[in-house]
Amino acid sequence: MTTTHPTSYPVPSPTLTRIIGLDLARSLAILGMFWAHMTAYEPAGFFDGWLNQVPDGRSAIVFALLAGVSVALMTGRQEPYEGDRMRKAQLRIVGRALVLFLAGGLLSSLGTPVVVILGFYGFWLLLALPFTHLPVRTLVWIAGVGAIAGPLFLILAKSAMAAGGLFVGSDPNSAFMTVMITGTYPGLQYGVFVIAGLAIGRSDMLSQARQLRLIAGGLVLMVGGYGLSYIATGGENTWPQHMPWDPLTSLLARDAAPRSLEGPLGWVFPSFGEFVSAEPHSATILETIGSGGFAIALLGVCLMAGSTAHYVIYPLIAMGSIPLTSYCGHVVAIYFFPDLEQSLSLTGFFVVSLTTMFVASVWKSQFSRGPLEWVAWRSGLLFSK
Image 1 (cartoon, rainbow, N blue to C red):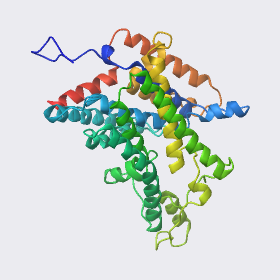
Image 2: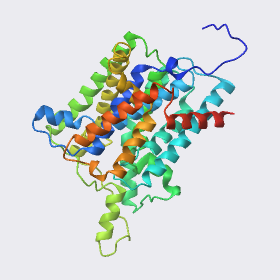
Image 3: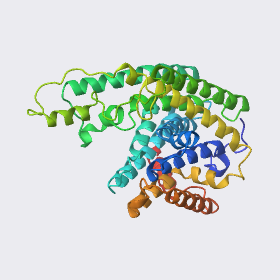
Image 4: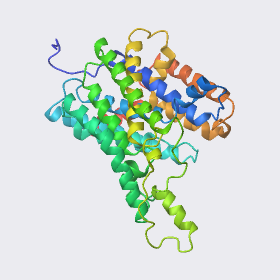
Protein backbone atom coordinates (compact mmCIF):
# COMPACT_ATOMS: atom_id res chain seq x y z
CA MET A 1 0.00 0.00 0.00
CA THR A 2 1.32 3.46 -0.86
CA THR A 3 0.53 6.86 0.58
CA THR A 4 0.83 10.43 -0.61
CA HIS A 5 1.37 11.78 2.93
CA PRO A 6 4.91 10.77 3.92
CA THR A 7 5.30 13.36 6.64
CA SER A 8 2.66 12.14 9.09
CA TYR A 9 0.26 9.36 9.95
CA PRO A 10 -3.01 10.92 11.07
CA VAL A 11 -5.35 8.72 13.03
CA PRO A 12 -8.06 7.56 10.59
CA SER A 13 -11.67 8.02 11.44
CA PRO A 14 -13.16 4.89 13.00
CA THR A 15 -16.14 5.25 10.70
CA LEU A 16 -13.85 4.69 7.73
CA THR A 17 -11.87 1.78 9.11
CA ARG A 18 -14.50 -0.23 10.98
CA ILE A 19 -15.50 -3.61 9.63
CA ILE A 20 -19.30 -3.57 9.69
CA GLY A 21 -19.62 -7.33 10.05
CA LEU A 22 -17.67 -7.26 13.31
CA ASP A 23 -20.03 -4.63 14.72
CA LEU A 24 -22.96 -6.82 13.71
CA ALA A 25 -21.42 -9.82 15.49
CA ARG A 26 -20.81 -7.71 18.59
CA SER A 27 -24.41 -6.52 18.58
CA LEU A 28 -25.73 -10.08 18.43
CA ALA A 29 -23.45 -11.06 21.32
CA ILE A 30 -24.74 -8.06 23.29
CA LEU A 31 -28.35 -9.05 22.59
CA GLY A 32 -27.47 -12.55 23.78
CA MET A 33 -26.20 -11.08 27.03
CA PHE A 34 -29.36 -9.01 27.38
CA TRP A 35 -31.45 -12.15 26.87
CA ALA A 36 -29.45 -14.22 29.35
CA HIS A 37 -29.63 -11.56 32.06
CA MET A 38 -33.15 -10.24 31.59
CA THR A 39 -35.38 -13.20 30.75
CA ALA A 40 -36.61 -16.32 32.50
CA TYR A 41 -38.77 -17.04 29.48
CA GLU A 42 -40.46 -20.45 29.34
CA PRO A 43 -40.57 -21.69 25.71
CA ALA A 44 -43.72 -23.33 24.39
CA GLY A 45 -42.35 -25.79 21.82
CA PHE A 46 -39.20 -27.50 20.51
CA PHE A 47 -38.12 -24.74 18.13
CA ASP A 48 -39.05 -22.09 20.69
CA GLY A 49 -36.98 -23.92 23.28
CA TRP A 50 -34.00 -24.30 20.95
CA LEU A 51 -34.10 -20.61 20.08
CA ASN A 52 -34.32 -19.73 23.77
CA GLN A 53 -31.11 -21.66 24.50
CA VAL A 54 -29.00 -20.24 21.66
CA PRO A 55 -27.58 -17.25 23.61
CA ASP A 56 -26.82 -19.33 26.72
CA GLY A 57 -23.04 -19.52 27.05
CA ARG A 58 -22.45 -18.77 23.39
CA SER A 59 -22.63 -14.99 23.66
CA ALA A 60 -19.53 -14.95 25.85
CA ILE A 61 -17.73 -17.23 23.39
CA VAL A 62 -18.53 -14.84 20.55
CA PHE A 63 -17.09 -12.03 22.68
CA ALA A 64 -13.91 -14.06 23.27
CA LEU A 65 -13.56 -14.76 19.55
CA LEU A 66 -14.03 -11.07 18.78
CA ALA A 67 -11.44 -10.16 21.43
CA GLY A 68 -8.87 -12.08 19.41
CA VAL A 69 -10.02 -10.44 16.18
CA SER A 70 -9.73 -7.01 17.81
CA VAL A 71 -6.16 -7.71 18.93
CA ALA A 72 -5.28 -8.72 15.37
CA LEU A 73 -6.77 -5.52 13.97
CA MET A 74 -4.93 -3.36 16.51
CA THR A 75 -1.58 -5.01 15.79
CA GLY A 76 -1.42 -4.90 11.99
CA ARG A 77 -4.29 -6.99 10.61
CA GLN A 78 -2.85 -9.35 7.95
CA GLU A 79 0.72 -8.11 8.39
CA PRO A 80 1.71 -7.93 12.08
CA TYR A 81 3.57 -4.84 13.14
CA GLU A 82 7.22 -5.15 14.06
CA GLY A 83 9.57 -3.48 16.48
CA ASP A 84 8.54 -0.23 18.11
CA ARG A 85 5.26 -0.10 16.21
CA MET A 86 4.20 -3.48 17.63
CA ARG A 87 5.31 -2.45 21.12
CA LYS A 88 3.15 0.69 20.98
CA ALA A 89 0.19 -1.29 19.67
CA GLN A 90 0.54 -3.77 22.53
CA LEU A 91 0.72 -0.93 25.06
CA ARG A 92 -2.48 0.53 23.61
CA ILE A 93 -4.15 -2.82 24.21
CA VAL A 94 -2.88 -2.83 27.82
CA GLY A 95 -4.38 0.63 28.31
CA ARG A 96 -7.74 -0.54 26.97
CA ALA A 97 -7.65 -3.65 29.17
CA LEU A 98 -7.14 -1.54 32.29
CA VAL A 99 -10.28 0.45 31.47
CA LEU A 100 -12.17 -2.85 31.15
CA PHE A 101 -10.85 -3.95 34.56
CA LEU A 102 -11.99 -0.67 36.09
CA ALA A 103 -15.41 -0.75 34.42
CA GLY A 104 -15.87 -4.39 35.39
CA GLY A 105 -15.00 -3.65 39.00
CA LEU A 106 -17.44 -0.75 39.16
CA LEU A 107 -20.26 -2.81 37.64
CA SER A 108 -19.58 -5.71 40.01
CA SER A 109 -19.79 -3.32 42.96
CA LEU A 110 -23.41 -2.58 42.03
CA GLY A 111 -24.33 -6.01 43.38
CA THR A 112 -26.55 -7.12 40.50
CA PRO A 113 -26.90 -10.85 39.78
CA VAL A 114 -25.04 -10.33 36.47
CA VAL A 115 -21.69 -12.12 36.19
CA VAL A 116 -19.81 -9.19 34.65
CA ILE A 117 -17.65 -10.26 31.73
CA LEU A 118 -15.51 -7.13 31.34
CA GLY A 119 -12.68 -8.17 33.65
CA PHE A 120 -12.39 -11.47 31.81
CA TYR A 121 -12.47 -9.64 28.47
CA GLY A 122 -9.62 -7.40 29.60
CA PHE A 123 -7.64 -10.48 30.56
CA TRP A 124 -8.35 -12.06 27.17
CA LEU A 125 -6.83 -9.03 25.47
CA LEU A 126 -3.68 -9.39 27.57
CA LEU A 127 -3.64 -13.15 27.03
CA ALA A 128 -3.40 -12.64 23.27
CA LEU A 129 -0.39 -10.30 23.38
CA PRO A 130 2.36 -12.99 23.41
CA PHE A 131 0.82 -14.50 20.26
CA THR A 132 0.60 -11.34 18.15
CA HIS A 133 3.80 -12.11 16.21
CA LEU A 134 2.75 -15.61 15.14
CA PRO A 135 1.56 -16.53 11.62
CA VAL A 136 -1.98 -17.70 10.94
CA ARG A 137 -1.08 -21.37 10.51
CA THR A 138 0.67 -21.49 13.89
CA LEU A 139 -2.25 -19.76 15.58
CA VAL A 140 -4.69 -22.28 14.09
CA TRP A 141 -2.58 -25.16 15.41
CA ILE A 142 -2.40 -23.62 18.88
CA ALA A 143 -6.17 -23.11 18.94
CA GLY A 144 -6.77 -26.67 17.75
CA VAL A 145 -4.51 -28.24 20.35
CA GLY A 146 -5.86 -25.90 23.02
CA ALA A 147 -9.45 -26.94 22.27
CA ILE A 148 -8.54 -30.40 23.54
CA ALA A 149 -5.76 -29.73 26.04
CA GLY A 150 -7.38 -26.68 27.66
CA PRO A 151 -10.61 -28.35 28.85
CA LEU A 152 -8.68 -31.46 29.93
CA PHE A 153 -6.24 -29.45 32.01
CA LEU A 154 -9.13 -27.39 33.39
CA ILE A 155 -10.84 -30.52 34.71
CA LEU A 156 -7.54 -31.84 36.07
CA ALA A 157 -6.74 -28.55 37.81
CA LYS A 158 -10.19 -28.26 39.37
CA SER A 159 -10.10 -31.89 40.51
CA ALA A 160 -6.67 -31.39 42.07
CA MET A 161 -7.86 -28.28 43.90
CA ALA A 162 -10.98 -30.05 45.15
CA ALA A 163 -8.97 -33.08 46.27
CA GLY A 164 -6.46 -30.91 48.11
CA GLY A 165 -9.08 -28.75 49.78
CA LEU A 166 -7.91 -25.67 47.91
CA PHE A 167 -10.27 -22.82 47.21
CA VAL A 168 -9.72 -19.59 45.31
CA GLY A 169 -10.94 -16.56 47.22
CA SER A 170 -12.06 -13.17 45.98
CA ASP A 171 -9.02 -11.10 46.97
CA PRO A 172 -6.59 -9.72 44.34
CA ASN A 173 -4.07 -12.50 45.01
CA SER A 174 -6.56 -14.96 43.52
CA ALA A 175 -7.16 -12.99 40.32
CA PHE A 176 -5.00 -15.12 38.05
CA MET A 177 -6.49 -18.40 39.28
CA THR A 178 -9.98 -16.97 38.88
CA VAL A 179 -9.57 -15.82 35.29
CA MET A 180 -7.69 -18.96 34.25
CA ILE A 181 -9.41 -21.81 36.12
CA THR A 182 -12.22 -21.17 38.57
CA GLY A 183 -14.09 -18.22 37.05
CA THR A 184 -17.24 -18.31 34.97
CA TYR A 185 -15.19 -17.75 31.81
CA PRO A 186 -11.91 -19.65 32.48
CA GLY A 187 -8.94 -18.70 30.34
CA LEU A 188 -7.97 -22.34 29.81
CA GLN A 189 -11.10 -22.68 27.68
CA TYR A 190 -11.82 -19.15 26.48
CA GLY A 191 -8.21 -18.56 25.53
CA VAL A 192 -8.83 -21.04 22.70
CA PHE A 193 -11.46 -18.74 21.21
CA VAL A 194 -9.20 -15.70 21.62
CA ILE A 195 -6.37 -17.40 19.71
CA ALA A 196 -8.84 -18.56 17.04
CA GLY A 197 -10.08 -14.98 16.72
CA LEU A 198 -6.50 -13.74 16.40
CA ALA A 199 -5.97 -16.19 13.54
CA ILE A 200 -9.17 -15.03 11.83
CA GLY A 201 -8.18 -11.40 12.27
CA ARG A 202 -4.82 -12.10 10.62
CA SER A 203 -6.60 -13.47 7.53
CA ASP A 204 -8.44 -11.59 4.79
CA MET A 205 -11.81 -11.35 6.54
CA LEU A 206 -13.26 -9.13 3.82
CA SER A 207 -12.78 -11.82 1.19
CA GLN A 208 -16.05 -13.57 0.38
CA ALA A 209 -14.17 -16.83 -0.09
CA ARG A 210 -12.73 -16.50 3.42
CA GLN A 211 -16.15 -15.70 4.84
CA LEU A 212 -17.61 -18.81 3.21
CA ARG A 213 -14.77 -20.88 4.66
CA LEU A 214 -15.48 -19.49 8.11
CA ILE A 215 -19.15 -20.43 7.77
CA ALA A 216 -18.39 -23.91 6.42
CA GLY A 217 -15.61 -24.62 8.92
CA GLY A 218 -17.69 -23.34 11.81
CA LEU A 219 -20.63 -25.52 10.82
CA VAL A 220 -18.38 -28.58 10.62
CA LEU A 221 -17.03 -27.92 14.11
CA MET A 222 -20.51 -27.19 15.45
CA VAL A 223 -22.04 -30.35 14.01
CA GLY A 224 -19.02 -32.38 15.12
CA GLY A 225 -18.97 -31.12 18.71
CA TYR A 226 -22.71 -31.07 19.33
CA GLY A 227 -23.34 -34.15 17.21
CA LEU A 228 -20.84 -36.33 19.06
CA SER A 229 -22.23 -35.12 22.38
CA TYR A 230 -25.79 -35.88 21.29
CA ILE A 231 -24.84 -39.39 20.18
CA ALA A 232 -22.86 -40.11 23.35
CA THR A 233 -25.49 -38.77 25.75
CA GLY A 234 -28.61 -39.76 23.83
CA GLY A 235 -29.67 -36.13 23.80
CA GLU A 236 -29.93 -35.99 27.59
CA ASN A 237 -28.51 -33.21 29.73
CA THR A 238 -25.84 -35.14 31.64
CA TRP A 239 -24.17 -32.10 33.16
CA PRO A 240 -24.77 -31.94 36.94
CA GLN A 241 -25.97 -28.77 38.62
CA HIS A 242 -23.28 -29.19 41.28
CA MET A 243 -19.91 -30.53 40.15
CA PRO A 244 -18.12 -32.58 42.84
CA TRP A 245 -14.73 -31.95 41.18
CA ASP A 246 -15.20 -28.18 41.41
CA PRO A 247 -13.30 -26.46 44.26
CA LEU A 248 -16.35 -24.47 45.42
CA THR A 249 -18.56 -27.56 45.57
CA SER A 250 -15.81 -29.35 47.45
CA LEU A 251 -15.61 -26.55 50.00
CA LEU A 252 -19.38 -26.59 50.51
CA ALA A 253 -19.23 -30.35 51.05
CA ARG A 254 -16.53 -29.88 53.66
CA ASP A 255 -18.54 -27.17 55.41
CA ALA A 256 -21.39 -29.67 55.78
CA ALA A 257 -19.10 -32.26 57.35
CA PRO A 258 -18.32 -32.42 61.09
CA ARG A 259 -14.63 -31.61 60.51
CA SER A 260 -15.13 -29.28 57.58
CA LEU A 261 -11.69 -28.48 56.18
CA GLU A 262 -9.49 -31.26 57.51
CA GLY A 263 -8.04 -33.72 55.05
CA PRO A 264 -8.60 -34.18 51.33
CA LEU A 265 -11.82 -35.53 49.90
CA GLY A 266 -10.01 -37.59 47.28
CA TRP A 267 -9.87 -37.24 43.52
CA VAL A 268 -13.21 -36.91 41.79
CA PHE A 269 -13.49 -36.74 38.01
CA PRO A 270 -16.49 -36.28 35.70
CA SER A 271 -18.34 -39.40 34.64
CA PHE A 272 -18.37 -40.37 30.97
CA GLY A 273 -21.75 -38.73 30.47
CA GLU A 274 -20.51 -35.53 32.06
CA PHE A 275 -17.24 -35.63 30.14
CA VAL A 276 -18.99 -35.81 26.74
CA SER A 277 -21.56 -33.16 27.60
CA ALA A 278 -21.74 -30.03 25.44
CA GLU A 279 -23.99 -28.04 27.75
CA PRO A 280 -23.35 -24.28 28.03
CA HIS A 281 -20.59 -23.34 30.50
CA SER A 282 -19.60 -26.99 30.95
CA ALA A 283 -16.10 -26.20 29.59
CA THR A 284 -15.75 -29.69 28.11
CA ILE A 285 -13.94 -30.55 24.90
CA LEU A 286 -17.14 -31.03 22.92
CA GLU A 287 -18.67 -27.80 24.21
CA THR A 288 -15.48 -25.96 23.25
CA ILE A 289 -15.55 -27.43 19.74
CA GLY A 290 -19.30 -27.09 19.18
CA SER A 291 -19.75 -23.62 20.64
CA GLY A 292 -16.50 -22.43 19.09
CA GLY A 293 -17.77 -23.61 15.71
CA PHE A 294 -21.03 -21.77 16.30
CA ALA A 295 -19.15 -18.53 17.02
CA ILE A 296 -16.93 -18.91 13.95
CA ALA A 297 -19.89 -19.62 11.65
CA LEU A 298 -21.83 -16.69 13.12
CA LEU A 299 -18.85 -14.41 12.53
CA GLY A 300 -18.65 -15.54 8.91
CA VAL A 301 -22.35 -14.84 8.40
CA CYS A 302 -22.05 -11.40 10.02
CA LEU A 303 -19.03 -10.48 7.90
CA MET A 304 -20.95 -11.43 4.78
CA ALA A 305 -24.18 -9.71 5.83
CA GLY A 306 -22.42 -6.59 7.06
CA SER A 307 -21.06 -5.82 3.61
CA THR A 308 -24.48 -6.01 1.95
CA ALA A 309 -27.10 -4.99 4.52
CA HIS A 310 -25.46 -2.05 6.27
CA TYR A 311 -28.34 0.40 6.07
CA VAL A 312 -31.06 -2.19 6.69
CA ILE A 313 -29.61 -3.23 10.06
CA TYR A 314 -28.01 0.08 11.02
CA PRO A 315 -29.44 0.20 14.59
CA LEU A 316 -27.88 -3.20 15.32
CA ILE A 317 -24.57 -2.12 13.83
CA ALA A 318 -24.63 1.14 15.80
CA MET A 319 -25.11 -0.78 19.05
CA GLY A 320 -22.29 -3.16 18.13
CA SER A 321 -19.97 -0.25 17.38
CA ILE A 322 -20.20 0.94 21.00
CA PRO A 323 -20.20 -2.46 22.76
CA LEU A 324 -18.66 -1.35 26.05
CA THR A 325 -21.18 1.44 26.53
CA SER A 326 -24.07 -0.83 25.48
CA TYR A 327 -23.02 -3.63 27.83
CA CYS A 328 -22.47 -1.33 30.81
CA GLY A 329 -25.80 0.35 30.13
CA HIS A 330 -27.78 -2.84 30.52
CA VAL A 331 -26.09 -3.73 33.83
CA VAL A 332 -26.85 -0.23 35.16
CA ALA A 333 -30.45 -0.64 33.97
CA ILE A 334 -30.75 -3.89 35.94
CA TYR A 335 -29.33 -2.10 39.00
CA PHE A 336 -31.96 0.64 38.86
CA PHE A 337 -34.77 -1.69 37.78
CA PRO A 338 -34.14 -5.05 39.52
CA ASP A 339 -37.35 -6.53 38.10
CA LEU A 340 -35.65 -6.61 34.69
CA GLU A 341 -33.39 -9.44 35.85
CA GLN A 342 -34.73 -12.90 34.90
CA SER A 343 -38.20 -11.53 34.15
CA LEU A 344 -40.91 -13.94 33.01
CA SER A 345 -41.95 -11.28 30.50
CA LEU A 346 -40.01 -10.29 27.38
CA THR A 347 -41.00 -6.64 27.81
CA GLY A 348 -37.85 -5.64 29.67
CA PHE A 349 -35.61 -7.33 27.12
CA PHE A 350 -37.25 -5.54 24.21
CA VAL A 351 -37.37 -2.17 25.98
CA VAL A 352 -33.67 -2.27 26.92
CA SER A 353 -32.63 -3.64 23.52
CA LEU A 354 -34.61 -1.12 21.47
CA THR A 355 -33.60 1.76 23.73
CA THR A 356 -29.93 0.81 23.44
CA MET A 357 -30.17 0.59 19.65
CA PHE A 358 -31.95 3.94 19.44
CA VAL A 359 -29.46 5.72 21.70
CA ALA A 360 -26.53 4.12 19.87
CA SER A 361 -27.92 5.20 16.49
CA VAL A 362 -28.37 8.80 17.63
CA TRP A 363 -24.94 8.87 19.28
CA LYS A 364 -23.16 7.42 16.24
CA SER A 365 -24.78 10.01 14.00
CA GLN A 366 -22.86 12.66 15.94
CA PHE A 367 -19.74 10.95 17.29
CA SER A 368 -17.32 8.35 15.98
CA ARG A 369 -16.88 6.60 19.34
CA GLY A 370 -19.11 5.76 22.25
CA PRO A 371 -18.40 7.55 25.57
CA LEU A 372 -16.75 4.56 27.24
CA GLU A 373 -15.06 3.56 23.98
CA TRP A 374 -13.52 7.04 23.94
CA VAL A 375 -12.18 6.54 27.47
CA ALA A 376 -10.65 3.19 26.45
CA TRP A 377 -9.16 4.75 23.32
CA ARG A 378 -7.62 7.62 25.30
CA SER A 379 -6.24 5.21 27.87
CA GLY A 380 -4.61 3.23 25.08
CA LEU A 381 -3.02 6.36 23.65
CA LEU A 382 -1.68 7.42 27.05
CA PHE A 383 -0.06 4.03 27.62
CA SER A 384 1.59 3.99 24.20
CA LYS A 385 3.35 7.35 24.59
